Image (cartoon, rainbow over all chains, first blue to last red; front, top):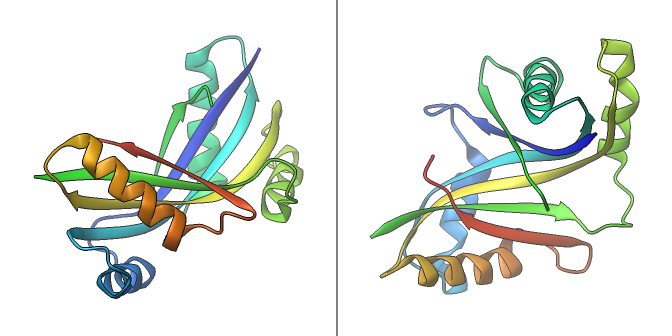
Length: 83
Length: 83
């Protein structure tokens, strides 16, 4: 069965995030106040053919750590998502 | 109160995604089989100061549509996430 998996890759806490900082600085000028701690990352949606959900997540985690993220500065989270 | 919100920005279905296609093509050579429909996107994590969760999500949706995504080719989803 094909499981829809979302992999989210974010910079580790403490790693400088110029993109997030730039967004945060731009927000008040556009009328958005009360927003803080903006961090920019990547997301990947994929279908994984696996016998069950646990196997799909394990496959996705290996893939995320080896191919989709740089574990030195980034952390990847995986989840099964219906949409 | 500060609500942690995740904004996920993905290309609309049908819009060409060269990054996702490249990842999908690279996977078998790295030993990952059974993966299809790879789509690359962006994710943003932010803290929104709002009186309740619904207000935080509404604020995030406006922000996502106006600043974080291009509604012509991208679709943004927002959710409150504890992590």
